[in-house]
Length: 355
Ligand code: GDD
Ligand code: MG
Image 1 (cartoon, rainbow, N blue to C red):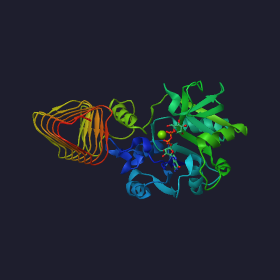
Image 2: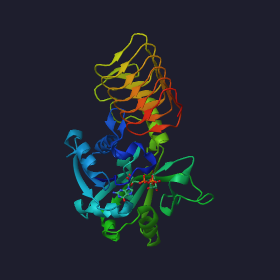
Image 3: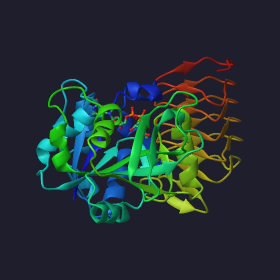
Image 4: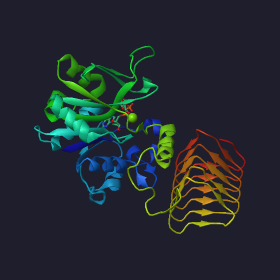
């Protein structure tokens, strides 16, 4: 089987992080995010992958190349303007033989859903499309999927208004398609899977099946969810790739090469520190401090439950909690960065300020 990964969105909800870095390349514990999807597909025997891209194509090609480094083969299907989730699939379909069954993934989900079993259900039910479902407490930001008892999809409702829809089972963004369905999607036009293709398949009486699962699932498309995904991996709720690229593991602390921490630095697990990080006297790092490479931490600084990208400088006595800090930011002395803050690349926070 081949796979198509949709990575053509603008990543608006992850701004400012995605202004200089496509959503699929945001760092996650020593890897670019999409490497988790590659590992997921590899685990289920899929190595031939089409990336459906639109924005920042050069950055994407530079990050993933031919795919060889990740043990896969990548093809790129470029859109000159966004074609929507179904138009993108149609465009990527030029790499797919119409007799094939294809896995399609939204490019921003971290999951360990059992794709092999899902493929068995797809074949067993002779469906043209099987949609992986996941259960969420608040379904309002997702696509709701109603099914018969046996699992046949009866209704698809994208982003319901309050009071609409009566299920907590949502579209997880993992699909198996019979690629013959791609020919129903108009070519070169903006067309949505969720708002157009799926409802049309249902009203045409096509067999659309569901595959509900309780395995780990997260859409990392907002800063809060992106941060939460790190915490989940560090709490062993989900395992996919080794944590840290080169680091040494020591009781849930993953330390990169050449890190220099003053002997009085207090480190609490779990934590991940990239290569060449430096921390000065009496800094307190962790729990859940995730540092990129070459992060410099001043004396008495405190960092908790935060994701800090490469080359960030944190001044003396600064306090960071529950935040995401983009690359090359400078946090002034005794500044406070509060929960929910997200700083774009290169932001400078003056001394003593609170953000
Ligand atoms: N190539 C391409 N072209 N990709 C696109 C385009 C496009 O025009 N538009 C969106 N994408 C990609 C995004 O990059 C993302 O990986 C995926 O399609 C889904 O888009 P999102 O913008 O993240 O959608 P969402 O999170 O609001 O909702 C979708 O995902 C939910 C699960 O996370 C829907 O599929 C919902 O039904 C679903 O529940
Ligand atoms: Mg999304």
